[in-house]
View 1: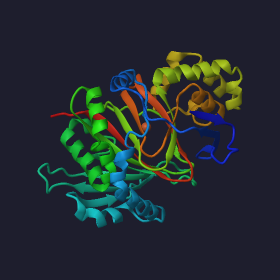
View 2: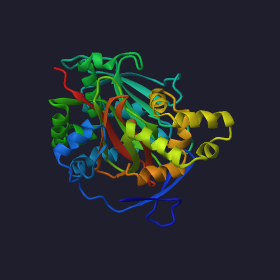
View 3: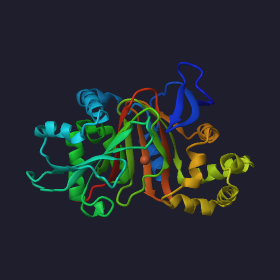
View 4: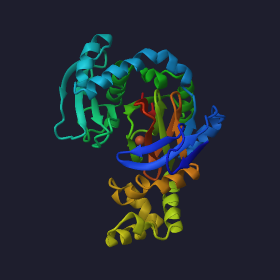
Length: 363
Ligand SMILES: [Fe+2]
């Protein structure tokens, strides 16, 4: 059970602070292991609901202690200004991928480094596979970063058109982050996901996250052509999530605005923005369409920066705390049928997590 408080006033309370916004605090009692049956989980996925599976990978984590512990030196080196590629060059004898070059990605202000690999010694012989390290925000006190794995021209290439190369990029993630086994080699998750997707499946478009204090992610979805959803596993540290299906998010936003007649005046000093906000929140179809656009600036001030909305969402049953060993499934069928989610780092520890997209295997 998780409860929201306006501020942390007990040693066990966890402040919700992200990128300069104080959004209250939470206190919680320990989660019991999930009692959901595979059938219930499948139904929740099909209904585009988030599925929280506490402690699902807790046992498997023990077998990955060494690579997880090694991350501390990788992250420390990056925070001290070293390039991630220095670390990966040192590791390159341990796997079949060759590092062929790197780029500082000057056009991308959040990028730390993009590192290119080839597996041309293998049967598949794929090149231009890459691992891109990026900061998660521009906020000075937020050291959160991620490593994303893909291939080809970022933002232009249709990665789903070349499943074999997409799989090689996924294998590169396993080579550089062997703790990927926590999801990839996990019989419980594999059986569950194969049942949900109706056949053999694979984990692609992988991201390894390191969420730091004051960091996390604003409310968003993960819909992308060619995958069905995301499996997220917390390996170290803790995160707090609000996660819910898109239609439910639309309903919650409208309901909250309706219940707070002076909300627009509270959120915006600009009269034009107040009118725009009220018009948007009074029309569920318009709101639904607005969420499909890339930019949600008008809603960010409510969804990501308004403590009482966080309280409302938590009290409406959309909150989850993920600790080491916990898993969250996020179905992402399409823009109309997906789970929206927002993430906060909890506590003083930078935590590692795996976020792997899942799709049916293409022979
Ligand atoms: Fe996400």
